[in-house]
Length: 231
Image 1: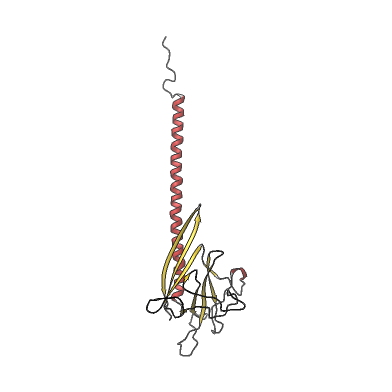
Image 2: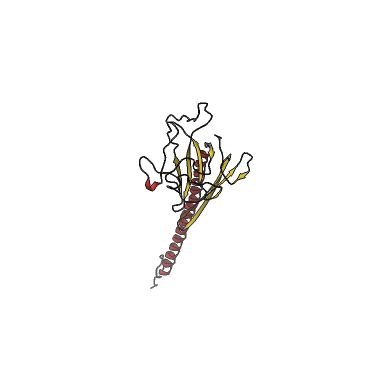
């Protein structure tokens, strides 16, 4: 009588174990590849998002700057929440350079969006102060409005720091978060850089943002030049 061959037509235990190891290894490779791909995709999306966000924030400020009558070295309208208040209601200060505050004199409008002139010949405009300042503790860029109380029918409303905002004095508008730095440069009519903003024809702004995602820090910078159109 012939003895039958063991495990004939099947798999030995060793073959089964090898198959399991190969399958697990293949699954690990596929999983690691998928995790890497997802992480890489998220990184690229984060880079794109922060770049677009930085660009949008700068262009938003630039649109306001283009409508300005002038760039100011200090606020021309009294602000009870200025850095030196209550002793000094005109203590906002703007100079060219890193971390600078941007102070814009924006033409005042009435409720019907008509310009408000300070003379009968319509040569001079009333202006409100628009102040872009960086809160270093929160890395947020805010816009404060100081309405000109002398402008008859002025539709602008003075804003206040968010922490003390009230219905009659709404919070300063948040322009953008995650701000590492705001740099301003000023240029005269001959396109020469000047340190003092008074009398300048254009302002250049560079905004830098940083954001941490999954243990990695991403940075984005965007620069634009805005020429004043209401000079």
